[in-house]
Image (cartoon, rainbow, N blue to C red; front, side):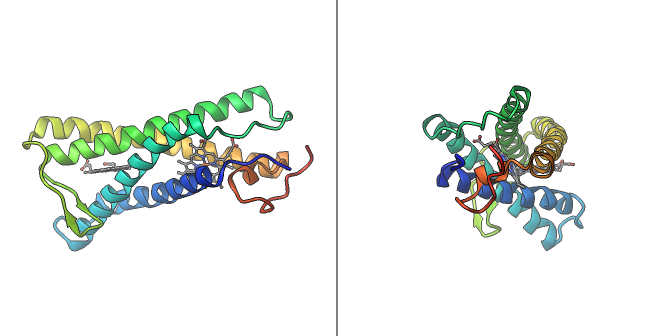
Length: 184
Ligand code: HEM
Ligand code: HEM
């Protein structure tokens, strides 16, 4: 039987992935929406809400990963491949902290408190400071490029293993019996 991530780790992975795949298109729409439109307000608020969900999920995941360890790789996965996967995951975790924190600081110093789910107003936490708001906006915008790079790398690695490796690596992140485990 192929070893798999625990059900909780799988749930955390897929919920985070869904949030990420929503946060990014929301960012592209909101930064191009008509200024002051309800579309602009709604997309900003959903971007921030789901971005904060990524922050909370990632903080929990980092701690939980030391208790509920990832499963061992099958011996046929090369050492360089494991090392690259490991590096990708830690860079992902780092960026999934960096992005929401810089986004939050940008928003807070810009004088735009978050309306959670586009519904629940939150208080203004810091006095407005345009210099700091601009600094965090730059740091936030710069962070998007490594995020895109890692997503391309991660999805290419999954595709590579499925198409060439036929080693059922995707099954490690899915319930038992979902994917053919391939030849050991
Ligand atoms: C995983 C989390 C996040 C990702 C991947 C992400 C990604 C992005 C991207 C790609 C942009 C467009 C940048 C540009 O080209 O200007 C953006 C803009 C922005 N994000 Fe996020 N974001 C995240 C979380 C957050 C959070 C939690 C907040 C606030 C609480 C936030 C606030 C903002 C704001 C205010 C902008 C517009 C910045 C500007 O006007 O230049 N983001 N975000
Ligand atoms: C932006 C979206 C995504 C992010 C941020 C992400 C992030 C991650 C991270 C951090 C891990 C390591 C988990 C750990 O060791 O605790 C992981 C593993 C994994 N992800 Fe994703 N993922 C995303 C989307 C996807 C998608 C769309 C797929 C499938 C097509 C996928 C398939 C997998 C698989 C199969 C593993 C386990 C691989 C292994 O055993 O080394 N991920 N992902």
